[in-house]
Image 1 (spheres, each protein chain N blue to C red):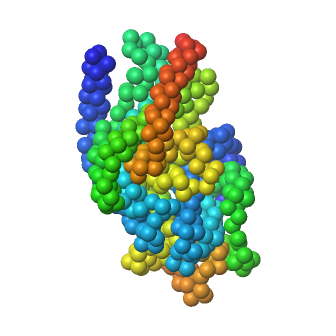
Image 2: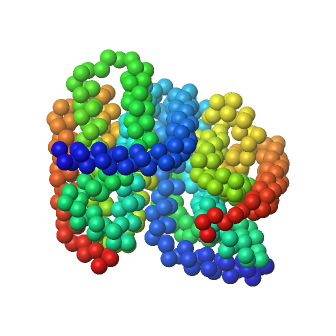
Image 3: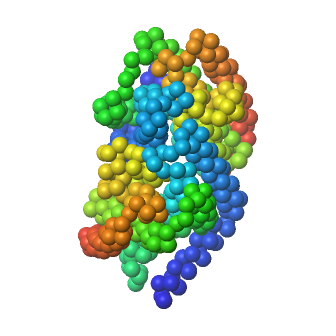
Length: 265
Length: 261
Protein backbone atom coordinates (compact mmCIF):
# COMPACT_ATOMS: atom_id res chain seq x y z
CA UNK A 1 0.00 0.00 0.00
CA UNK A 2 2.82 2.36 0.90
CA UNK A 3 4.39 1.60 -2.46
CA UNK A 4 1.19 2.65 -4.21
CA UNK A 5 1.17 5.98 -2.39
CA UNK A 6 4.84 6.53 -3.19
CA UNK A 7 4.30 5.91 -6.88
CA UNK A 8 1.16 8.05 -6.95
CA UNK A 9 3.10 10.84 -5.31
CA UNK A 10 5.80 10.67 -8.00
CA UNK A 11 3.21 10.72 -10.78
CA UNK A 12 1.14 13.54 -9.29
CA UNK A 13 4.12 15.66 -8.40
CA UNK A 14 5.64 15.30 -11.88
CA UNK A 15 2.27 16.00 -13.49
CA UNK A 16 1.68 19.16 -11.50
CA UNK A 17 5.26 20.35 -11.73
CA UNK A 18 4.64 20.90 -15.46
CA UNK A 19 2.00 23.46 -14.56
CA UNK A 20 4.03 25.34 -12.00
CA UNK A 21 3.54 28.63 -13.86
CA UNK A 22 -0.24 28.16 -13.62
CA UNK A 23 0.23 27.32 -9.97
CA UNK A 24 2.08 30.55 -9.41
CA UNK A 25 -0.77 32.55 -10.89
CA UNK A 26 -3.47 30.61 -9.07
CA UNK A 27 -1.75 31.07 -5.73
CA UNK A 28 -2.59 34.76 -6.14
CA UNK A 29 -6.23 33.93 -5.48
CA UNK A 30 -5.52 32.66 -2.01
CA UNK A 31 -3.36 35.64 -1.16
CA UNK A 32 -5.67 38.50 -2.10
CA UNK A 33 -8.66 38.07 0.19
CA UNK A 34 -6.72 37.69 3.48
CA UNK A 35 -4.62 40.74 2.58
CA UNK A 36 -7.77 42.77 1.84
CA UNK A 37 -9.33 41.86 5.17
CA UNK A 38 -6.03 42.39 6.95
CA UNK A 39 -5.96 45.92 5.53
CA UNK A 40 -9.61 46.59 6.40
CA UNK A 41 -9.34 45.43 10.01
CA UNK A 42 -5.96 46.94 10.80
CA UNK A 43 -7.28 50.27 9.48
CA UNK A 44 -10.16 50.04 11.94
CA UNK A 45 -7.98 48.83 14.82
CA UNK A 46 -5.46 51.61 14.22
CA UNK A 47 -8.16 54.29 14.09
CA UNK A 48 -9.67 53.36 17.44
CA UNK A 49 -6.85 51.55 19.27
CA UNK A 50 -8.46 48.12 19.24
CA UNK A 51 -11.55 46.30 18.04
CA UNK A 52 -13.31 44.33 20.73
CA UNK A 53 -9.96 43.81 22.48
CA UNK A 54 -8.10 42.87 19.30
CA UNK A 55 -5.15 45.10 18.38
CA UNK A 56 -3.77 45.75 14.91
CA UNK A 57 -1.05 43.17 15.57
CA UNK A 58 -3.69 40.59 16.52
CA UNK A 59 -5.28 41.06 13.11
CA UNK A 60 -1.96 40.97 11.29
CA UNK A 61 -0.89 37.72 12.96
CA UNK A 62 -4.37 36.27 12.43
CA UNK A 63 -4.46 36.84 8.69
CA UNK A 64 -0.79 36.04 8.14
CA UNK A 65 -1.37 32.69 9.87
CA UNK A 66 -4.56 32.24 7.87
CA UNK A 67 -2.54 32.37 4.63
CA UNK A 68 -0.66 29.25 5.69
CA UNK A 69 -3.41 27.41 7.55
CA UNK A 70 -5.78 27.89 4.63
CA UNK A 71 -3.34 26.18 2.26
CA UNK A 72 -2.85 23.24 4.60
CA UNK A 73 -6.51 22.51 5.29
CA UNK A 74 -7.95 23.42 1.88
CA UNK A 75 -9.38 20.73 -0.35
CA UNK A 76 -9.82 20.62 -4.12
CA UNK A 77 -11.55 17.25 -4.47
CA UNK A 78 -14.65 18.75 -6.10
CA UNK A 79 -12.57 20.34 -8.84
CA UNK A 80 -10.59 17.22 -9.66
CA UNK A 81 -13.27 14.57 -9.32
CA UNK A 82 -16.78 15.92 -9.92
CA UNK A 83 -16.33 16.14 -13.68
CA UNK A 84 -15.17 12.51 -13.77
CA UNK A 85 -18.49 11.40 -12.31
CA UNK A 86 -20.31 13.77 -14.65
CA UNK A 87 -18.71 12.53 -17.86
CA UNK A 88 -18.26 8.93 -16.75
CA UNK A 89 -14.46 8.76 -16.88
CA UNK A 90 -14.52 7.63 -13.26
CA UNK A 91 -15.25 4.17 -14.67
CA UNK A 92 -11.55 3.80 -15.50
CA UNK A 93 -10.53 4.64 -11.94
CA UNK A 94 -13.05 2.21 -10.52
CA UNK A 95 -11.39 -0.67 -12.36
CA UNK A 96 -8.26 -0.26 -10.29
CA UNK A 97 -8.04 -2.37 -7.15
CA UNK A 98 -7.65 0.67 -4.84
CA UNK A 99 -10.11 3.26 -3.59
CA UNK A 100 -9.84 6.13 -6.12
CA UNK A 101 -10.65 8.94 -3.69
CA UNK A 102 -8.53 7.70 -0.81
CA UNK A 103 -5.53 7.13 -3.09
CA UNK A 104 -5.08 9.24 -6.20
CA UNK A 105 -7.44 12.11 -5.28
CA UNK A 106 -5.89 12.40 -1.83
CA UNK A 107 -2.34 12.34 -3.17
CA UNK A 108 -3.24 14.88 -5.85
CA UNK A 109 -4.54 17.16 -3.11
CA UNK A 110 -1.37 16.80 -1.05
CA UNK A 111 0.95 17.21 -4.06
CA UNK A 112 -0.78 20.43 -5.06
CA UNK A 113 -0.36 21.73 -1.51
CA UNK A 114 3.35 20.96 -1.61
CA UNK A 115 3.68 22.79 -4.91
CA UNK A 116 1.67 25.73 -3.62
CA UNK A 117 4.04 26.07 -0.72
CA UNK A 118 7.01 26.58 -3.01
CA UNK A 119 5.23 29.77 -4.14
CA UNK A 120 3.53 30.67 -0.90
CA UNK A 121 6.60 30.65 1.34
CA UNK A 122 8.57 33.36 -0.49
CA UNK A 123 5.40 35.43 -0.86
CA UNK A 124 4.70 34.98 2.83
CA UNK A 125 8.19 36.12 3.80
CA UNK A 126 7.82 39.26 1.68
CA UNK A 127 4.45 40.00 3.29
CA UNK A 128 5.94 39.42 6.74
CA UNK A 129 8.62 41.98 5.93
CA UNK A 130 5.90 44.43 4.90
CA UNK A 131 3.45 43.93 7.77
CA UNK A 132 5.90 43.07 10.61
CA UNK A 133 3.70 40.56 12.46
CA UNK A 134 4.75 40.18 16.09
CA UNK A 135 4.55 36.47 16.83
CA UNK A 136 5.60 36.88 20.47
CA UNK A 137 2.69 34.77 21.76
CA UNK A 138 3.58 31.69 19.72
CA UNK A 139 5.39 28.93 21.62
CA UNK A 140 6.84 25.56 20.51
CA UNK A 141 3.98 23.98 22.44
CA UNK A 142 1.32 25.92 20.53
CA UNK A 143 2.92 24.99 17.22
CA UNK A 144 3.04 21.33 18.27
CA UNK A 145 -0.63 21.39 19.29
CA UNK A 146 -1.50 22.95 15.95
CA UNK A 147 -0.23 19.89 14.05
CA UNK A 148 -3.07 17.56 15.05
CA UNK A 149 -5.55 20.44 14.66
CA UNK A 150 -4.36 21.05 11.09
CA UNK A 151 -4.51 17.34 10.25
CA UNK A 152 -8.05 17.11 11.60
CA UNK A 153 -9.00 20.29 9.73
CA UNK A 154 -7.73 18.92 6.44
CA UNK A 155 -9.21 15.46 7.03
CA UNK A 156 -12.68 16.85 7.78
CA UNK A 157 -12.54 19.29 4.85
CA UNK A 158 -11.33 16.54 2.50
CA UNK A 159 -14.01 14.09 3.61
CA UNK A 160 -16.76 16.71 3.33
CA UNK A 161 -15.50 17.74 -0.10
CA UNK A 162 -15.43 14.09 -1.17
CA UNK A 163 -18.96 13.55 0.18
CA UNK A 164 -20.26 16.54 -1.78
CA UNK A 165 -18.46 15.27 -4.87
CA UNK A 166 -20.19 11.92 -4.40
CA UNK A 167 -23.57 13.66 -4.50
CA UNK A 168 -22.83 13.91 -8.23
CA UNK A 169 -23.75 10.20 -8.41
CA UNK A 170 -27.33 11.32 -7.78
CA UNK A 171 -27.48 14.84 -9.20
CA UNK A 172 -24.74 14.70 -11.92
CA UNK A 173 -23.94 18.39 -11.37
CA UNK A 174 -22.69 19.51 -7.97
CA UNK A 175 -21.33 22.99 -8.63
CA UNK A 176 -24.29 24.78 -7.07
CA UNK A 177 -24.03 22.62 -3.94
CA UNK A 178 -20.29 23.17 -3.77
CA UNK A 179 -20.72 26.93 -4.06
CA UNK A 180 -23.27 26.87 -1.26
CA UNK A 181 -20.74 24.86 0.75
CA UNK A 182 -17.98 27.39 0.14
CA UNK A 183 -20.31 30.21 1.19
CA UNK A 184 -20.86 28.40 4.48
CA UNK A 185 -17.11 27.96 4.85
CA UNK A 186 -16.50 31.67 4.33
CA UNK A 187 -19.16 32.52 6.88
CA UNK A 188 -18.38 30.06 9.66
CA UNK A 189 -14.68 29.24 9.34
CA UNK A 190 -13.16 32.57 10.34
CA UNK A 191 -12.03 33.36 6.79
CA UNK A 192 -13.55 36.83 6.77
CA UNK A 193 -13.02 37.85 10.36
CA UNK A 194 -11.88 36.21 13.61
CA UNK A 195 -15.06 34.50 14.85
CA UNK A 196 -15.14 36.41 18.13
CA UNK A 197 -16.13 39.55 16.19
CA UNK A 198 -19.15 37.83 14.65
CA UNK A 199 -22.63 38.42 16.04
CA UNK A 200 -23.27 36.18 19.07
CA UNK A 201 -25.76 34.03 17.17
CA UNK A 202 -23.30 33.16 14.39
CA UNK A 203 -20.59 32.35 16.93
CA UNK A 204 -22.96 29.95 18.69
CA UNK A 205 -23.93 28.28 15.41
CA UNK A 206 -20.28 28.05 14.36
CA UNK A 207 -19.53 26.09 17.53
CA UNK A 208 -21.70 23.24 16.29
CA UNK A 209 -20.43 23.24 12.71
CA UNK A 210 -17.23 21.68 11.37
CA UNK A 211 -16.11 24.76 9.43
CA UNK A 212 -14.22 26.52 12.23
CA UNK A 213 -11.92 23.47 12.32
CA UNK A 214 -10.59 24.49 8.87
CA UNK A 215 -9.26 27.90 9.83
CA UNK A 216 -10.27 29.58 13.07
CA UNK A 217 -9.36 26.77 15.48
CA UNK A 218 -5.88 25.98 14.09
CA UNK A 219 -5.06 29.69 13.83
CA UNK A 220 -6.09 30.37 17.42
CA UNK A 221 -4.09 27.34 18.57
CA UNK A 222 -0.95 28.53 16.77
CA UNK A 223 -1.40 32.01 18.24
CA UNK A 224 -1.89 30.53 21.72
CA UNK A 225 -5.20 32.30 22.30
CA UNK A 226 -7.33 29.38 23.53
CA UNK A 227 -7.84 28.41 27.16
CA UNK A 228 -7.26 24.74 28.11
CA UNK A 229 -11.03 24.31 28.34
CA UNK A 230 -11.56 25.65 24.83
CA UNK A 231 -8.74 23.43 23.56
CA UNK A 232 -10.38 20.31 24.96
CA UNK A 233 -13.76 21.34 23.54
CA UNK A 234 -12.35 22.06 20.07
CA UNK A 235 -10.36 18.84 19.89
CA UNK A 236 -13.40 16.88 21.03
CA UNK A 237 -15.50 18.56 18.35
CA UNK A 238 -12.76 17.81 15.80
CA UNK A 239 -12.73 14.13 16.73
CA UNK A 240 -16.52 13.95 16.59
CA UNK A 241 -16.67 15.58 13.16
CA UNK A 242 -13.92 13.30 11.88
CA UNK A 243 -16.00 10.25 12.79
CA UNK A 244 -19.21 11.75 11.40
CA UNK A 245 -17.55 12.71 8.11
CA UNK A 246 -15.91 9.30 7.75
CA UNK A 247 -19.30 7.61 8.14
CA UNK A 248 -20.98 10.12 5.85
CA UNK A 249 -18.37 9.70 3.15
CA UNK A 250 -18.18 5.92 3.24
CA UNK A 251 -21.97 5.71 3.03
CA UNK A 252 -22.39 8.15 0.11
CA UNK A 253 -19.49 6.51 -1.72
CA UNK A 254 -20.85 2.99 -1.29
CA UNK A 255 -24.40 3.89 -2.29
CA UNK A 256 -23.20 6.26 -5.02
CA UNK A 257 -20.98 3.77 -6.81
CA UNK A 258 -23.91 1.34 -6.90
CA UNK A 259 -25.91 3.93 -8.81
CA UNK A 260 -23.06 4.93 -11.10
CA UNK A 261 -23.93 4.30 -14.74
CA UNK A 262 -20.89 5.93 -16.38
CA UNK A 263 -23.00 8.24 -18.52
CA UNK A 264 -21.14 9.55 -21.49
CA UNK A 265 -18.18 7.21 -21.27
CA UNK B 1 -26.70 49.59 -37.74
CA UNK B 2 -25.23 46.29 -38.87
CA UNK B 3 -23.32 46.11 -35.59
CA UNK B 4 -26.52 46.54 -33.62
CA UNK B 5 -28.26 43.82 -35.61
CA UNK B 6 -25.31 41.52 -35.04
CA UNK B 7 -25.36 42.28 -31.33
CA UNK B 8 -29.07 41.48 -31.22
CA UNK B 9 -28.44 38.19 -33.03
CA UNK B 10 -25.63 37.20 -30.64
CA UNK B 11 -27.86 38.14 -27.72
CA UNK B 12 -30.64 35.94 -29.06
CA UNK B 13 -28.33 32.95 -29.50
CA UNK B 14 -27.06 33.34 -25.94
CA UNK B 15 -30.58 33.68 -24.53
CA UNK B 16 -31.51 30.45 -26.27
CA UNK B 17 -28.47 28.75 -24.76
CA UNK B 18 -29.51 30.00 -21.32
CA UNK B 19 -33.06 28.77 -21.77
CA UNK B 20 -31.72 25.26 -22.25
CA UNK B 21 -30.62 25.34 -18.61
CA UNK B 22 -33.48 27.12 -16.86
CA UNK B 23 -32.96 25.48 -13.45
CA UNK B 24 -29.33 26.56 -13.52
CA UNK B 25 -30.39 30.16 -14.00
CA UNK B 26 -32.74 30.05 -11.02
CA UNK B 27 -30.11 28.36 -8.86
CA UNK B 28 -27.49 30.89 -9.92
CA UNK B 29 -29.71 33.83 -9.01
CA UNK B 30 -30.52 32.26 -5.64
CA UNK B 31 -26.81 31.72 -4.95
CA UNK B 32 -26.16 35.29 -6.02
CA UNK B 33 -28.73 36.54 -3.49
CA UNK B 34 -27.19 34.32 -0.85
CA UNK B 35 -23.75 35.88 -1.48
CA UNK B 36 -25.32 39.33 -1.35
CA UNK B 37 -26.72 38.52 2.08
CA UNK B 38 -23.25 37.45 3.13
CA UNK B 39 -21.67 40.64 1.75
CA UNK B 40 -24.16 42.80 3.64
CA UNK B 41 -23.59 40.74 6.79
CA UNK B 42 -19.87 41.41 6.37
CA UNK B 43 -20.46 45.15 6.17
CA UNK B 44 -22.77 44.90 9.16
CA UNK B 45 -20.04 43.18 11.19
CA UNK B 46 -17.52 45.84 10.22
CA UNK B 47 -19.85 48.66 11.22
CA UNK B 48 -20.86 46.94 14.46
CA UNK B 49 -17.25 47.43 15.48
CA UNK B 50 -16.57 50.87 14.08
CA UNK B 51 -18.37 53.92 12.75
CA UNK B 52 -16.11 54.55 9.78
CA UNK B 53 -13.64 52.60 7.67
CA UNK B 54 -10.83 54.98 6.76
CA UNK B 55 -13.31 57.87 6.67
CA UNK B 56 -15.97 55.98 4.71
CA UNK B 57 -19.41 55.36 6.22
CA UNK B 58 -21.77 52.41 5.86
CA UNK B 59 -23.84 54.04 3.10
CA UNK B 60 -20.74 54.76 1.05
CA UNK B 61 -19.53 51.18 1.39
CA UNK B 62 -22.96 49.86 0.33
CA UNK B 63 -22.81 52.12 -2.73
CA UNK B 64 -19.25 50.91 -3.40
CA UNK B 65 -20.52 47.34 -3.21
CA UNK B 66 -23.11 48.35 -5.80
CA UNK B 67 -20.44 49.68 -8.16
CA UNK B 68 -18.45 46.50 -7.54
CA UNK B 69 -21.50 44.48 -8.60
CA UNK B 70 -21.70 46.47 -11.83
CA UNK B 71 -18.04 45.82 -12.61
CA UNK B 72 -18.41 42.20 -11.60
CA UNK B 73 -21.41 41.87 -13.92
CA UNK B 74 -19.31 43.13 -16.81
CA UNK B 75 -16.61 40.61 -15.94
CA UNK B 76 -18.86 37.64 -15.34
CA UNK B 77 -21.25 38.31 -18.22
CA UNK B 78 -18.69 39.10 -20.94
CA UNK B 79 -15.04 39.07 -19.97
CA UNK B 80 -14.56 35.67 -18.31
CA UNK B 81 -16.69 33.57 -20.70
CA UNK B 82 -15.18 35.25 -23.76
CA UNK B 83 -11.67 34.80 -22.42
CA UNK B 84 -12.30 31.09 -22.16
CA UNK B 85 -13.75 31.01 -25.66
CA UNK B 86 -10.86 33.06 -27.03
CA UNK B 87 -8.12 31.01 -25.39
CA UNK B 88 -9.66 27.79 -26.69
CA UNK B 89 -10.00 29.22 -30.18
CA UNK B 90 -6.35 30.31 -30.25
CA UNK B 91 -5.20 26.89 -29.12
CA UNK B 92 -7.26 24.85 -31.58
CA UNK B 93 -7.16 27.33 -34.45
CA UNK B 94 -10.88 28.10 -34.68
CA UNK B 95 -10.02 31.77 -34.21
CA UNK B 96 -9.38 31.75 -37.98
CA UNK B 97 -13.14 31.58 -38.55
CA UNK B 98 -13.66 34.63 -36.36
CA UNK B 99 -10.98 36.60 -38.17
CA UNK B 100 -12.34 35.63 -41.58
CA UNK B 101 -15.76 37.12 -40.88
CA UNK B 102 -16.33 40.56 -42.40
CA UNK B 103 -16.90 42.12 -38.97
CA UNK B 104 -14.59 43.86 -36.54
CA UNK B 105 -12.78 40.95 -34.83
CA UNK B 106 -12.48 42.75 -31.50
CA UNK B 107 -16.24 43.18 -31.46
CA UNK B 108 -16.85 39.49 -32.16
CA UNK B 109 -14.34 38.34 -29.57
CA UNK B 110 -15.99 40.59 -26.97
CA UNK B 111 -19.60 39.63 -27.54
CA UNK B 112 -19.65 36.05 -28.79
CA UNK B 113 -20.51 34.71 -25.34
CA UNK B 114 -22.88 36.40 -22.92
CA UNK B 115 -23.93 35.01 -19.58
CA UNK B 116 -27.45 36.39 -19.71
CA UNK B 117 -28.52 35.91 -16.10
CA UNK B 118 -25.78 38.30 -14.99
CA UNK B 119 -28.03 41.14 -16.18
CA UNK B 120 -29.58 40.55 -12.80
CA UNK B 121 -26.37 41.79 -11.19
CA UNK B 122 -26.79 45.12 -12.99
CA UNK B 123 -30.18 45.64 -11.30
CA UNK B 124 -28.77 44.54 -7.97
CA UNK B 125 -25.78 46.85 -8.30
CA UNK B 126 -27.97 49.82 -9.20
CA UNK B 127 -30.29 49.08 -6.27
CA UNK B 128 -27.30 48.90 -3.89
CA UNK B 129 -26.01 52.25 -5.15
CA UNK B 130 -29.41 53.91 -4.59
CA UNK B 131 -29.79 52.34 -1.13
CA UNK B 132 -26.22 53.31 -0.24
CA UNK B 133 -26.76 56.94 -1.24
CA UNK B 134 -29.99 56.90 0.74
CA UNK B 135 -28.27 55.54 3.88
CA UNK B 136 -25.49 58.12 3.79
CA UNK B 137 -28.26 60.72 3.88
CA UNK B 138 -26.42 63.85 2.84
CA UNK B 139 -27.71 65.49 -0.31
CA UNK B 140 -25.66 64.66 -3.38
CA UNK B 141 -24.51 67.43 -5.65
CA UNK B 142 -25.79 66.96 -9.21
CA UNK B 143 -22.26 67.41 -10.60
CA UNK B 144 -20.99 64.68 -8.26
CA UNK B 145 -23.73 62.32 -9.38
CA UNK B 146 -22.94 63.03 -13.01
CA UNK B 147 -19.18 62.51 -12.55
CA UNK B 148 -19.95 59.32 -10.64
CA UNK B 149 -21.90 57.90 -13.57
CA UNK B 150 -19.28 59.10 -16.04
CA UNK B 151 -16.40 57.60 -14.05
CA UNK B 152 -18.16 54.25 -13.58
CA UNK B 153 -18.34 54.08 -17.37
CA UNK B 154 -14.78 55.23 -18.01
CA UNK B 155 -13.42 52.88 -15.32
CA UNK B 156 -15.09 49.96 -17.04
CA UNK B 157 -13.63 51.07 -20.38
CA UNK B 158 -10.15 51.13 -18.83
CA UNK B 159 -10.59 47.61 -17.44
CA UNK B 160 -11.98 46.44 -20.78
CA UNK B 161 -8.96 47.92 -22.61
CA UNK B 162 -6.63 46.15 -20.22
CA UNK B 163 -8.44 42.91 -20.96
CA UNK B 164 -8.04 43.38 -24.72
CA UNK B 165 -4.30 43.88 -24.22
CA UNK B 166 -4.12 40.82 -21.96
CA UNK B 167 -5.81 38.50 -24.44
CA UNK B 168 -3.98 40.07 -27.40
CA UNK B 169 -0.77 38.97 -25.65
CA UNK B 170 -1.84 35.43 -26.51
CA UNK B 171 -1.05 36.22 -30.17
CA UNK B 172 2.63 36.49 -29.24
CA UNK B 173 2.78 33.85 -26.48
CA UNK B 174 0.43 31.08 -27.59
CA UNK B 175 0.68 29.09 -24.35
CA UNK B 176 -0.62 31.91 -22.20
CA UNK B 177 -3.77 30.50 -20.61
CA UNK B 178 -3.28 32.60 -17.51
CA UNK B 179 -3.69 35.87 -19.34
CA UNK B 180 -6.49 37.11 -17.09
CA UNK B 181 -5.77 35.33 -13.79
CA UNK B 182 -4.23 38.40 -12.21
CA UNK B 183 -7.34 40.41 -13.09
CA UNK B 184 -9.57 37.73 -11.57
CA UNK B 185 -7.49 37.43 -8.44
CA UNK B 186 -7.34 41.15 -7.78
CA UNK B 187 -10.99 41.84 -8.61
CA UNK B 188 -12.05 41.26 -5.00
CA UNK B 189 -10.03 44.28 -3.91
CA UNK B 190 -12.83 46.35 -5.49
CA UNK B 191 -15.16 45.59 -2.59
CA UNK B 192 -13.41 48.01 -0.25
CA UNK B 193 -12.07 51.54 -0.75
CA UNK B 194 -8.51 51.34 -2.08
CA UNK B 195 -7.60 54.11 0.35
CA UNK B 196 -7.45 51.58 3.23
CA UNK B 197 -4.90 49.38 1.45
CA UNK B 198 -1.17 49.58 2.10
CA UNK B 199 0.58 51.88 -0.40
CA UNK B 200 2.07 49.09 -2.56
CA UNK B 201 -1.31 47.38 -3.00
CA UNK B 202 -2.97 50.72 -3.70
CA UNK B 203 -0.40 51.37 -6.43
CA UNK B 204 -1.07 47.97 -7.99
CA UNK B 205 -4.87 48.31 -8.04
CA UNK B 206 -4.64 51.89 -9.34
CA UNK B 207 -1.92 51.71 -11.98
CA UNK B 208 -1.08 48.09 -12.83
CA UNK B 209 -4.48 46.38 -12.68
CA UNK B 210 -6.67 49.47 -12.26
CA UNK B 211 -9.64 47.90 -10.48
CA UNK B 212 -9.81 50.83 -8.08
CA UNK B 213 -10.24 53.19 -11.02
CA UNK B 214 -13.55 51.49 -11.79
CA UNK B 215 -14.72 51.12 -8.17
CA UNK B 216 -13.11 53.46 -5.62
CA UNK B 217 -12.64 56.41 -7.97
CA UNK B 218 -16.32 56.76 -9.02
CA UNK B 219 -17.29 56.63 -5.35
CA UNK B 220 -14.75 59.34 -4.57
CA UNK B 221 -16.45 61.45 -7.21
CA UNK B 222 -19.81 60.78 -5.59
CA UNK B 223 -18.41 61.86 -2.21
CA UNK B 224 -17.21 65.06 -3.86
CA UNK B 225 -13.52 64.18 -3.28
CA UNK B 226 -12.51 64.82 -6.89
CA UNK B 227 -12.14 68.10 -8.73
CA UNK B 228 -13.53 68.58 -12.23
CA UNK B 229 -10.07 68.50 -13.90
CA UNK B 230 -9.43 65.15 -12.20
CA UNK B 231 -12.71 63.75 -13.50
CA UNK B 232 -11.88 64.93 -17.02
CA UNK B 233 -8.39 63.45 -16.69
CA UNK B 234 -9.84 60.01 -15.92
CA UNK B 235 -12.20 60.35 -18.89
CA UNK B 236 -9.25 61.27 -21.12
CA UNK B 237 -7.18 58.34 -19.84
CA UNK B 238 -9.98 55.93 -20.62
CA UNK B 239 -10.19 57.15 -24.24
CA UNK B 240 -6.41 56.85 -24.57
CA UNK B 241 -6.46 53.32 -23.09
CA UNK B 242 -9.19 52.25 -25.47
CA UNK B 243 -7.36 53.60 -28.53
CA UNK B 244 -4.12 51.95 -27.42
CA UNK B 245 -5.95 48.66 -26.89
CA UNK B 246 -7.42 48.81 -30.41
CA UNK B 247 -3.96 49.35 -31.90
CA UNK B 248 -2.40 46.52 -29.89
CA UNK B 249 -5.25 44.23 -30.88
CA UNK B 250 -4.74 45.03 -34.56
CA UNK B 251 -1.00 44.46 -34.30
CA UNK B 252 -1.69 41.14 -32.58
CA UNK B 253 -4.07 40.01 -35.29
CA UNK B 254 -1.48 40.91 -37.95
CA UNK B 255 1.14 38.94 -36.05
CA UNK B 256 -1.10 35.91 -35.59
CA UNK B 257 -0.38 33.09 -38.02
CA UNK B 258 -3.10 30.61 -37.07
CA UNK B 259 -2.81 27.26 -35.34
CA UNK B 260 -4.77 25.03 -37.67
CA UNK B 261 -3.29 25.83 -41.06
